Amino acid sequence: MVTDSPNGGGKHRRPEPESPLPSAVRPGSGPAPTFEEGEVPGPATERGDGPGDGSDGGRDTGAGGGSGSDGGSGGGMMRSSAIMAVGTMASRLTGFARTIVLGAAIGTHLLGDAYHTAHTIPFILNDLLIGGLMASVIIPFLVKRRKRDADGGKATEDRLFTTTALALFLITAAAILAAEFLIWMYGSQFTPIQYETSVYLARFLLAQIFFVGLSGLLSAMLNTRNRFGAAVWAPVLNNIVIMSVAGVFLWVAGPGRTPETVTDGQLVLLGAGTAGGMALQTLVLFVALTRTGYRWRPRLDLRGSGLGEAVRTAGWMMLYTLFTQAGLWITTNIANAANVASIEQGAEVGAGISAYNLAYQLFQLPYAIIAVSLITVLLPQMSAHADDRDWDAVRAGFSRTLRVSAFVLVPAAFAVALFAQPLSVLAFARGSISVADAENIGQVLTVMSLGLVPFTVFQLMLRVFFAMGDTRTPAMIGFANLAVHTALAVTSYLVLPPEMVVVGVAAGFMISFLSGLTIAGLVLSRRIGGLDGKHVIGTLLRLHLAVVPSVAAGFGVLWAFDTHVGPGLATYVGAPAAGCVLGALLFLGTARLLRVPELSAAVELVRGRLRR
Image (tube, rainbow, N blue to C red; front, side, top):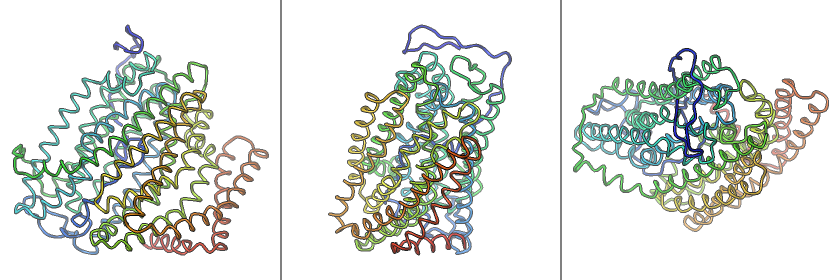
């Protein structure tokens, strides 16, 4: 394989394989962007008409293919909830397993960064051009047309499916043609052979733009029919495919491959395998949609469909998405440049975008498991209260959700920060990732974990704005976050040693949420007459006091294992396990002494989930 490189001029050739390799398949929560810079939450345009309100449940929507027959019954809703809960957990677990296997296959050095950069771009382009519209415009638009149109929205769905598929195909083709430029945008400091490798992978990975966008639309169409199973289980299949591909790559290529030693056939396995996994997910969703009775009829008669007017209302949401992706562009560029500099200076640890992504996967688990579940319940209720201008109820819902989330997330954040290194070694130190690489991932994770609570508070505040139908203010706050993140990331690159830059970038990312929640809190307080600050701040202070004995005990456990046991599996498993058990008991006892009222609320929440 030969490719021009803007980084070094001339041509660079890698060794050819001795025999052809199969072009297999690859990652998932769908290939979820492992680099997400926070979520882009769906605004309140979903309220009132959403599929979850049961308004469409049980009735035949004619040509549209029918809603689920279970949709209107309590039993059907319980079954849907159970399917979603189990599927979501399976997706999280297999997604994390996918991350571990993929890390073992490609590592966190130059090859890992080349892959992760090429894999990042399809999701960025999808978010910028399609994904930002999906939550804010497309889903509410589909729900309304299915309820209001005589044909159950069938013609609208046909138009939307045809237009989206055609647009995605053109965008994907253009992106593949522009692969060299796109990789240069995110890896301008790559070594010449690393750049060439990333471009080669991007020729395959950019095909995901089509499949990611179409999967989003198919999931939306299934959700409007109260069919949720395929949308949560299809990513599990994608994850399994990617784990298989990464495992085959590790078996064929062996650990420790570099851009100089990896062959074209091995890159085809990674690239085509990844895109194939996403294609398989899309196919599963399409088959699930056809089983509801929907039959696609290509249509491009958009005049008078109302779609153009709906899209024009999403301007501020698109701007918010743009700022979010700009932050990711800065993170990726700086982390990539720092890793190249670090390795050129003789450092033996991966300290680039791959390490950042792996740390983020561990960081977001507590938020995804605890806060997202509560937010999912909160948003429809808060949207209804905002629609009625019942600001007392909006304030109460925000306050209670924040305080109950914080009761779990405050100790979780400190626990992950304390035991980040043994946890990272336990999770990632295998294959192409050394113990030193994993310990560096742990340093990034420590910094991220200390920002878990501000990150969650900011996400909750965004939901309040969206419940009020306001996307302009989040866009403006997003710009402020971007400015803080950019300033701190650039400062880290200029003043820190190359191997520590990614830690500084992670710190800047977390600090940006502190500034964001400060601005958002001031604006919201003026708009709705306060945010129950007395209770919120009081609870947060008491929770941080309650966690002090646990932190002290955690340091003691780490010291004891380091001193008397030493590095090894016993420490990597035993220290986090013993520290978390002891810390949890101390935290619960101290919280009880401090009379933290959220203790009983959290217990009830856990009991409710266990009964469910």
